[in-house]
Structure formats: structure tokens, C-alpha cells
Length: 269
Image 1 (tube, helix red, strand yellow):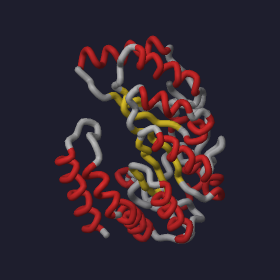
Image 2 (tube, rainbow, N blue to C red):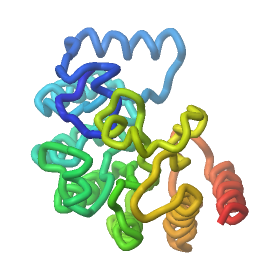
Image 3 (tube, rainbow, N blue to C red):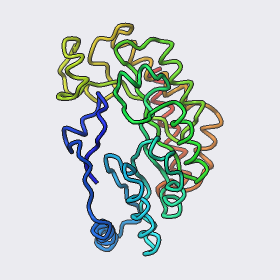
Image 4 (tube, rainbow, N blue to C red):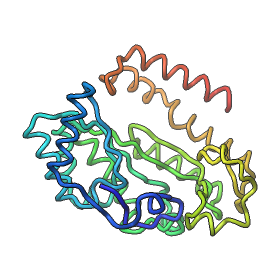
């Protein structure tokens, strides 16, 4: 599918894919998956639709077809928490079809900030909690995305975001600094506050516009601290080391990856 009807202020999807939700036929999609397997011996496929579960009936039909044809290769998808909770059986069907990870934009537990982001729909604290729990019940890991640096955001707001991430405990927490990409609503909202147009810094890891409460270096330091607070929890490190195969990578390799990541985090903390 392509397109997302929602209008999140920071998102450039509607500039690239449009707001109208468009679909290919199930048969056409499945044939392409079969072709990828045949031509490239693919064992794992990531479906990076803008919002795969916008129409849950189509999602169910797609994964039921993959199950019937014995094609358990789709491992990763992107969707919204409210649509997932609205149709909880989709999590069970995705799990049966082989899905192991789902990306969800959680952004913040603060309703005021979500409103500022123009998240739309029923993006809320309650839906995020329920979605992560629903995925856990079906052995699907949540890749949760969290934002920091909304223009009026306070230190307490960001602290609450980090604590909320630790509370719901997704398999992966992706913390990013709010970044205004040209053409987005956010860009026009903060255009007068932009401090650099070095596009190399528009990577969601650098602060590129003035906020009310943080300087650029301070916000970048907070970002590093967020990763350190979340990932250096002893239980999480042990879980990563001893959990099963992840995208086909053996645990020994995962141990070295974790140690390398921790070294980088501590160097920049």
C-alpha cells in the first residue's frame, strides 16, 4: 500500500506518497513475495508500507493468504497502535504468518504534545499501552518510536517519555530528536527558528531548530541519555543475549553487537 490519510506535523510521507490510501491486489502482492523468494532466495521480508493496518480487513486477507500458501517470510511491518487495538485479531494472524516485529510511532505519552504533533486518529497513551501488550501476547516485538524536542517540551516532559518507554518496555525503543523536513507542517511552524541547513544534521540525532527550553547540545545529550537509560537495564541486556534467533543472527553475534553499542553509548554519555 501507499499513502497515509493522517497528517502528523513532522512526517514527510504525504509529500512522498500522498494522503490517499492506495492498495495493490492481494494476489499481485503475494506474487511479488513469491518472486522475491524464488529469485533471491529471500528468507525474511520487511514490508515498509506507510501504514499497513489502515484497512485491517485487507491486512487479514493478505496474511491469511500467506499462511495458506506457506509463505512465512514477512518479518517486519509498520502500523498504528489505534488500528491494531481496534482489531486485536490482526496481531494473532500476523504472528501465525511469521511476523516478528512491528514498528509503531508512539512519540510521547503526553496528550498535549501528541496534539501538537497532529497525530490524528486515536493516538493516545492508552492505545500505546494496549498495542504493546497485544503484540507481546502474540510474540511480536514492538519497535517503538519516541520523539523529543517539541518546541514547548520541558525537561519533565522528556523524562516522562523515557520513563514511559521503560514502563511499556517495547523490544526496541527508537528515540529521535524532532526534525523539521522541508515541506512538512513542522518545517513551516519552526522555519524562523531553524539554526542550520546542514542537511547532514537532519538525521533525527541532531537538534536543528531552537526550542523554548533546550539548546542543541543539551537536547543531543538528553537523547544519548535516553538510549543509555533504556538499554543499559541489566534485565534488558540479558534478555537480548539469551533470546532466540533475531532475523537469523546467532546470539553470539548479538552479544558483540550489544557490547559495541554500549561502548559507543558510554563514550558519548
